[in-house]
View 1 (cartoon, rainbow, N blue to C red):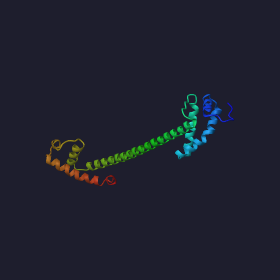
View 2: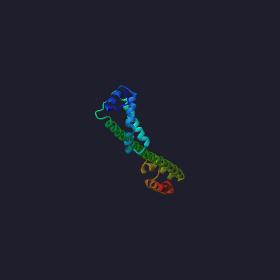
View 3: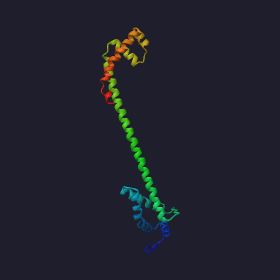
View 4: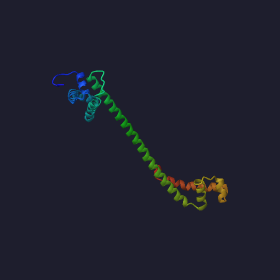
Length: 189
């Protein structure tokens, strides 16, 4: 097919379906600039504009043998650009949503890590302070908070009255409360 005269879209499509590269080049020369101008109205990034139009022509060549165009070639190509742009925007939206969710997860994780570190430091500080309590008070505190025993069980185990255990735990709480109040993390949250 000689390309020195004006051919119809259908004649070009038939030549393209037959694998004629010159027909593809002719179609590219005829439609690439109008498609680029159209895509530029829909996409702000010039590189994305070039990619959209290039993808249209790559797809056209790859699907040339099975291509079934019901409308004019021009309408088909412009509609293809519009759909590619819609897909581009959808991918950008999905990417943006993913990045936002990732940032939230990272922020939460960082807070969780900070909270775990602060909790560990507080536990260590409480353990140091608890180890300095008088023996009966320390034992009552550990039996209550580490072992989960009731005041009656603690009284029986330490051979003390329940009222004495109540008093020991109350005094231990007062001493250790000062440790918590002096712990800087609780003022930062």
